[in-house]
Length: 429
Image 1 (cartoon, rainbow, N blue to C red):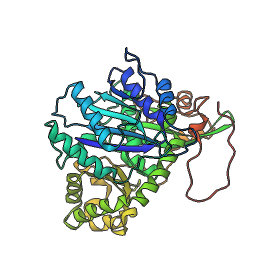
Image 2: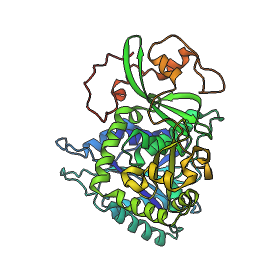
Image 3: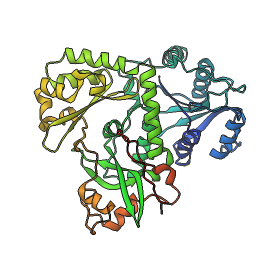
Image 4: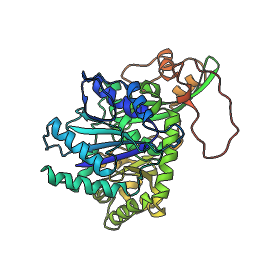
């Protein structure tokens, strides 16, 4: 059984994500503790939030008060709802949350049943439940639960339990497919830049772009998600982040990157990934061997090539610690220049699809296709190609990229590496 723990401050986002599963008939509530749910099982995010807030002293302020846990039994473990409830309840007791308000949800949106648990770290007296050594503590608990309930034990491929189905742009439910990947990944993984986030999404045939535009004189900044084909090209209609909620827009992404950077630094998370990557590098003669060895350790390698086919970026996605790290952040020997010089099959873009590994083929500068950017800059109307089998008119594209009237908070500018003069943004329409 694989457990994943995410700590943050977005209680509404965690509850809304689970409500969506219930509304779609892909989830239900199995157990509650100090949270009232009607006998008919009708779930209300607002009502549950009030119960959580009543359990937390109002004078307490923290950005890490909410805990969202996922428990994933092995796909071959067929468990009744009662047994799943027992497992979830016992896990929370042993983790130190037995007296806290919490909700246990069962999800069946992928090819295995699994649990999502939402709770708070803030005790009634205002103190916080410690999150130190959560990984070690959780691993011990799940090991014991596997033995107690006769579950399949973890193996070296345990990271695969968290893999989601890649988006298929030929299906009619594109928005649902993208949401089912973006929403959990945005909370499960640590990443420090838009490029790292894009590398993570590329594993599931999803692209993301930051867009700056002007609509009737009003400037705005937002995110647009798109499906990708086998070569990393955008296909299908782009989806603005506001369609998935504020939790997946620029403001939330900025906070995630900031929090991730702090955790990676203070907890020394990159050290273990660096050791695994270094061992694979030392034992590999070719780029193909290097990639394969990393995959066996639960690490994906994403390569980024420029328009001329030159390797300019390397990203490692460690599914064991749920961390995305650029090669240069791990050390010079893991940078694009070093790996390109060492492995001839990495130095040119012709072989970058080896082993069906998704890569990012966009140039280093994170910009939109020139024709898209011309629309955002209010230039002469044009026809946009490259998003679907049919051309997309300017009007329909702009309607996709323009934020909703009440989405201003989710569309603040992304942080810049270099300090720049602040710009004032008008009211969005």
